[in-house]
Length: 378
Image (tube, rainbow, N blue to C red):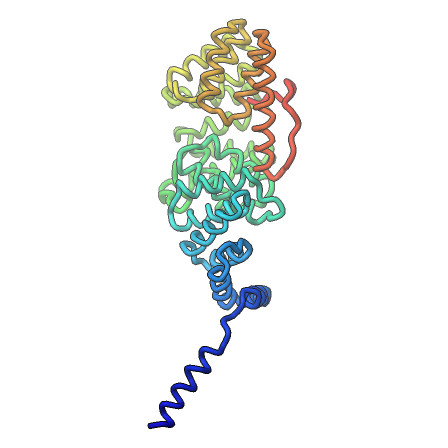
């Protein structure tokens, strides 16, 4: 019995004499495993490292990104949450957290976090930027925020080749269908794909191809909602009269739809037909009194017609409804300037410049000049 007891005592003494791994050793081994593409070993060691040192932001970052790369989205989301508590200004972290939210079907959180990541900027990481923009656009389309989805889809169309996923997203946006591409009904798939291809070509500035694609779309689906609207918007620059005709056709097919009236109003403003723009703006406000763009159109038309006080009031309503819209502050600045309210005009110009700067960062284009009348954003 003595040898057995001695053996047990000897083993226990030996075990207690083995030192616990140091943080420095664990972090070195974790980095080595990651650099050698031994992902599971790296994940295990980074977990160990952040347990030893909970405020190790680099460890949380690598743990989170490795979990994301290996499709463990709930765990990755939790790790990104810990990382962002330490580094709240890290745009790529917010973007990747948003992508994790998307994967676990937390769509509200996904849009919030993607927006924040893009606003902070993910410079130097173009793949994260591309994927974040695409999923932001998908979420905006699904939420019915079609106008807001135009910008990320435009940036994507001008920066990458035509693809099924991008074409479907553009098609859903153009046809105002609040769905993800995977949820397109089979009966509507050809319509969405054809509309999406025409829209992609238009956003990608391939004018001749887009014109033919839209003509084919209208011929194939002459009574489908939003087809004439999409064609009309695409023609406003190259053939304004044809564009207006298509928009008016859409207004006939959908008399209670606000956006055809809005586009007609904005086009008439560009043509200097302020009386016609006022009529269309009044109709838009009646149809959608909570829509900032409707008050913008009406307000601008009234200001141009010399009804400065009423027009300014409409633009102030629009700015309250959309405080983050650069265009609204630009329009309001012009109205204040016409009213002789110099200080208010300067304040609105400064707000416009700051919002436009943030928009450029989201596009991956840091830096912005102050707004001028020549820019005429709408």
